[in-house]
Amino acid sequence: SEVSNPVFSYYPDDQALHFYRWTSPPGVMKILSIIIIIMCVAVFACVASTLAWDYDMNMMGGIGYGSSYGGGYGGSYGGSYGGSYGAGGGYGGYGGYGGGDMYMDPKSGKGFIIGVAGITFIAVLVIFVLVVSRQSSARGHKFYLGAIVVSAILAFLMLIATIVYLVAVNPTAQSSGSMMYNQVLQLCAQYQNQAQAQGIFLNQYLYHYCVVEPQEAIAIVFGFLVVVGLIILVVFAAKARSQIRRWGEHRILWEEPKGLEAPPQHRGLKDYSDISSAIMSPKPRDYDTAESGDDLFPPIMDETERLSYKREFDRDHQEYRALQTELDQINQDLASLERELDQEPQGSPQYLDALDEYSRLKSLKKSAQYQMKKQRYKHLRSKLSHIKRRISEYDRRP
Image (cartoon, rainbow, N blue to C red):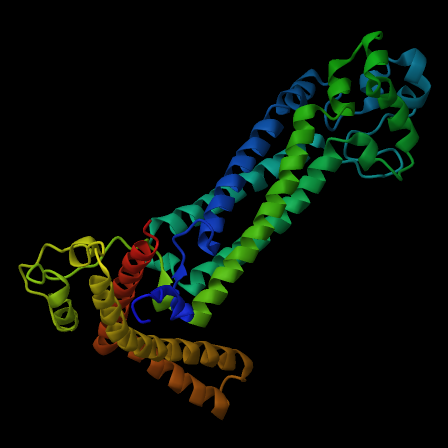
């Protein structure tokens, strides 16, 4: 019967896009932004904690970047490495080996990843603030297009920076394939085995150069995780932009509905049919209060009241569907015209016709009549949603 049928199964295609939820594309973007920001801070902290050794080496002049290993270690390792590293003219600093092979300065690699992590931190923080600020500029498809471009560029830079850092802090990796690979491997071999290193005199600077420390390994892992996070951010930003362009901004709920608004003189279900004229006409100048949906539609107490609620729903639902169809058609036409403008050569008759129609529809969306219909649509959506909830609560009663 009409009384016993649940109302939620009648109109399955009426659901709006709930972008205020954490599981929606913007919600996932907020979660990802927080995670990426934390990982950028972790990368900065891990890399910065090892910079002291690099600057100390510069001041000591022993393994200073730009000085030769031959000069630095000719005396210390004269017996063991004097022939190989002392008399051989040294490494010629990190600028290059004797044979001209380029060798990366660990300090430069660390500076590069710190810089990129800092830029990523700032950019993602800006995206996060704009998404949660509920500003109108962050609710259009252009904002999400910008987020896609920025995140993609940052993902590429972070990938490069992490690879550069990985090579910079691993001397055997960056010298692999060069003529000096065996010499560097022999020089660092004594420090690779921790048990063996305990029994020899440790040059702390060379030890920190040859061994990838735990915080450096953590920074590398977080660097790649930031890249993955940015790629996922691009995916969900593209998904949000696609849904906005397909369904239109009027189908999107950016904030959770709190209740229904109506002039204070309307009280009870019997007066709710007058809200249409109140919404479509200007509000009184001294209007400063509103009733909630709980006041207008209190919990259902019996089957008779449920039937009244459902009739109210069916009556307004026809108007709601008509407004939805009209607004959807305008937004779909705009999206179609945007694609046509991108495909047609500028100045062609087809391009000019599409541009005229596009301008007409954009002007229509700014008109007072369109805005009134949009507000009416939002009002009906909140009202119908509240009625559905009341009927569902009644149907689920013990």
